[in-house]
Length: 161
Image (cartoon, rainbow, N blue to C red; front, side, top):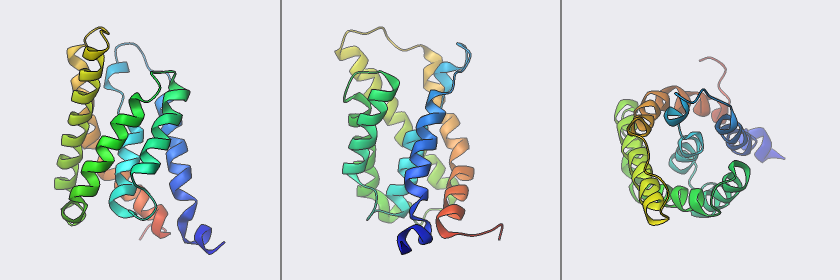
């Protein structure tokens, strides 16, 4: 019970919200610009609470996302595990970067995710991704600071300090 009082509810709730944000309908023109909400939220938890979020959670969340979004089973799981692995490897450095540098590092990870996604599309013989598909990581860079601050405030239980 003390775990719930210490913000233990924030991890599952934030992942569910990120999953739901990925389901929100967008106009066709904006669809490729959709930020990868699950990756952003999972990145926060891998950086800030590595004992609670790691490769296993990334894999499970990815499988759930594959089922919910109706994609190839294991595609998002692979993408999230790759991202979580890189984050775990460089967590000690990333954690102490200023928020602006963290946002750039997250942007690089999101760009890497797009490369992995494009490679999977290519390997499976699916159509190539449109050029504006590559702008979504830039949107992730812009969303990282407010998302980080929001999740940090919820996790630590701050009230507008």
